[in-house]
Length: 253
Ligand code: ADP
Ligand code: MG
Image (cartoon, rainbow, N blue to C red; front, side, top):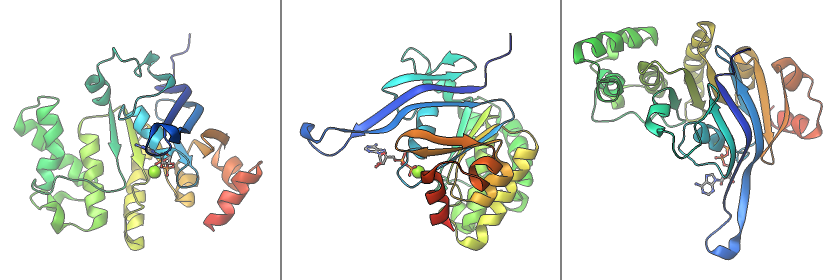
């Protein structure tokens, strides 16, 4: 028997209140999503603003409950309310659009906080690992600096180092370059390509199609709460089969 994929979404449904008051009804944001991310794979979510990319990532990170369906990690349904959510989250790491580093902590303390508090690693050991991670993301000389002394690109690289510090099995990245000045986007994407080359398992939402083309094993185009089209970057981005996908890509150019 082959091992189940690291992450599998099965028929995942999620709706939100469409407005204030009970009469407003509900808006379906995820309408039966199936998705697999195998170990060492990179799956890229694309779609218009509001198509549910962030909601999907938040469902995986257990920041949102699902209404229906399964979120399977190693074949175990983590959407089940009996599951220990903190234990699941310790296996995942998410990086957001806004690099939300803790402003009152040094860069090194940002990176070592979770290993020390959540994983109970001794300070010395956590700091050694933290410095190695900062070196890896090109911030060896900023360890003692504070977030507001860093450029946006550096802050986002520090946030990625922090996400990696817990040794996550799956890295979730939600438009991590969207808030950056254009000249800072490249340094963050280059880092992600490096992580990818090392075999880091990733589920990524992005508007950067050139990056998606380079990094993705599978591109998943979300539209109307569904997977509208999926395939290799060459299939979805260069030879889309459906009108909505073509229209989406045309508007990005
Ligand atoms: P994307 O990341 O693709 O831009 P989102 O997942 O952020 O899309 O949002 C999808 C839809 O869900 C949007 O219409 C958004 O307004 C709605 N939505 C997301 N989170 C909430 C929430 N907490 N309450 C109500 N509506 C939400
Ligand atoms: Mg989003």
